[in-house]
Length: 206
Image (cartoon, rainbow, N blue to C red; front, side):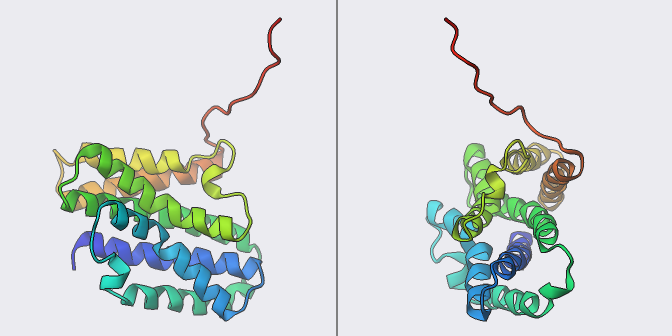
């Protein structure tokens, strides 16, 4: 199993956990848990594979990815009540999932010989779109769009750092650099309030 495949499995599992925690906050049944977990887990990777014309899509080629997502949903269904703040758990799991999914997307695009802008975009898409789908379905403001928070920026910076590290480091280490930069920026945003400047409208001048 290659490193990008390992990263795909890890991101599927962790993103599925976030989908299941979102389902617990919405008080869904076990089927709802499984659906939301699967949607979140494979959403970003599916978009990546469709855009790259990768046939078959990763979870169709290996249905075990769906099994991993459903297992995560069942696990959360029976344990979510043990956590005092499920939103906090969801947010930190999402940060971890982002830092795994971005290098997974980067690794797949590199393996297909894509140019650097495509590689960066695939890292961002793999990391961001599953969580975006989850939040839209749950009628929540997507974490991707939370005011000022580093989310897409963290994914972009991580993917870029991985590419910049490739000429001087082995590909596996470069993907780990990608993961580390992504998580550091996202965690810093959550812990210390790191953020980009936010647009504020001003009254028109006369």
